[in-house]
Length: 501
Image 1: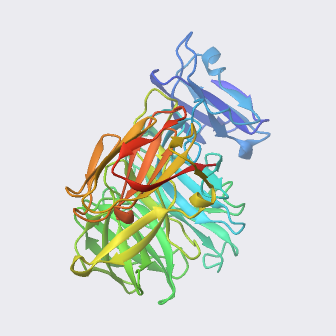
Image 2: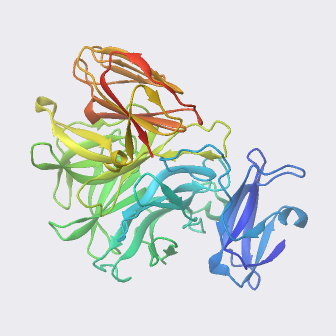
Image 3: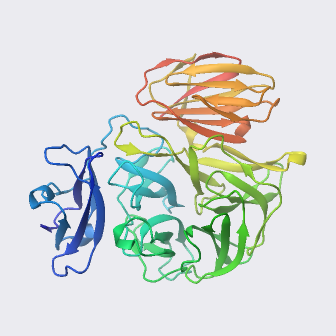
């Protein structure tokens, strides 16, 4: 047991990726029955150097004495130290335009909302103590331009009710919930019943946290928004439906089942629909999109990029055509749209990229804008494109040389084109006759025999491709730290290259 009088904003915990996990807990000195935090940390063995340091914010305990307990000798627990700042990122080479954690594991984007000053707030599923999935926290970050990110602190910690699974955010300008105009409300899942020791015997429930400081800190509210409704029910996504004057929540239940709820105060919720959307799975979203040429439709979205186009009356969603898939591979996952984003529907997805020995795992996609096209008998199809801010950061490149940093390529390719291109760290193969595209060795289908305009984005660690005019999106791993090199290939006309700053 170690006694620590908190006089700095952070506690830094040493992490050795291959070490066995140790269960560490924090208690207030005056009450050893009141557990404050519980961590599973792969703590370095005797003589082993840490791979990185996990920063745990402890400002709320300033001036208090905390007890750090665990099955380690006191001299080992003494490695945990206080600090005024988070440590520098553990990996020297990092993506420059795709958000990635400074260390640890990241998955689903959560709590996405636009702040009054224009910043985009991103919360995300986070294991600060390893490079694999673990006891989930919420990390945080923010951006002024959707491309360059400031990493924030952990804002939600596991507790006796569960680890912190996915959820969404809402800026309550109308003060419907009574926490004050402009309060930020975060709807999240307490995932009891997982492997975390503190909440292993619990169940999955929906809860609320509130921020009055622009998302820098979140305060959990007592009680439930929704009790356990089904095994694994999770991932609440909340928005406002002005036509019926109510707030709407979509929620994953279990198997292929989802539910829709209504509320007038963001606190009390009434279920209005349960629907089965096979083969949909978790992380639901529901949003309306403009249709090219006029009109609008509603889209029900699930984690694998599976979506249904239909209608929504504020109570029930009715699919009007079969399920479609927006993704060309299994790397993008768990996308969420931004709350209160003016004038467009903006989405981020988690990119399930492999860990190649680094001290962080996972990235977020470049934010993308959604729209719909109507394609005759085929019905409605999603259209995706990089956020317009990307092109504001783009500088046209002459010739065929791409830089050592992030870059983009945009091309129009007609029906019947076969071609391939190689670029530093990867390659692209296009066959519009056969309806096949391959990005860095990952192949997927596009509409055969049709023109295939595309946008290719390359950053350290990842390539993203918007193919067939944005009807299909995919991502693939790239190496980190490539050098300036030539883009070479054949069969692609009117190729434009851009450096991204």
